[in-house]
Length: 323
Image (spheres, rainbow, N blue to C red):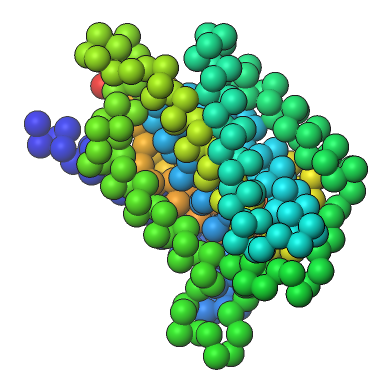
């Protein structure tokens, strides 16, 4: 019994220990600029977009699903925000419109999955292309520029801290992601909906027999997941200050990888918010360290891909021991 408890604790702490080891390795190997406060802030800013989308993907993967259209939702969200700002809409309304666009896409995914009874992989693979096409169509296959005066506070969400703002430690967008991460963690751990999500991912048939409204829960799961993709789109827009229908290609892979590296299981029923954020931090730290060392991009991709394969292998070994 004690051995099982220690294994469970090790599974939870494994991603955190991996992050500490990887960061320590780059502190030793990379130039001194890697460990500066400025670079730590940069890592936090670069991680925020993936982490925000990973909050929603965590819910989806725990429920036993997957969403390959997250990157396209981010692109669509930036286009919607830019179009609304260009039309003279208030920035708050534009931001809400971008997030709502993501949530609507998730609602459509959830309805297609539950009504057509098609596996999420196929449905979201299709909507990945559809939403990317919609984003390009709305933007007329070009970037949408916005008057700087119309941006107001939107451009400050992920902007580097100015001299008088260092007391904040990190930009507002990072604090927003942290606040929402706490909210999602509470939602999964202490609410009926959270228990239903874990039950759904562990065994859908058993969950149905226990009275869980499976279809309704799935629709809500995909809607929430896409809402966080819309929020990631808001952060992406803040970073670029343009609506770009070609942005975030492949982002869904980074998001899924963050959840898996953080201990989430593609089989469903397992995952944590902290683990997903740590997984995103691991990938960003590797890329930052490799860049500081002057390593080419293909080396970064090989290292990141190797870590993803290792994380999935560890997940499978863990499941074999428990079955």
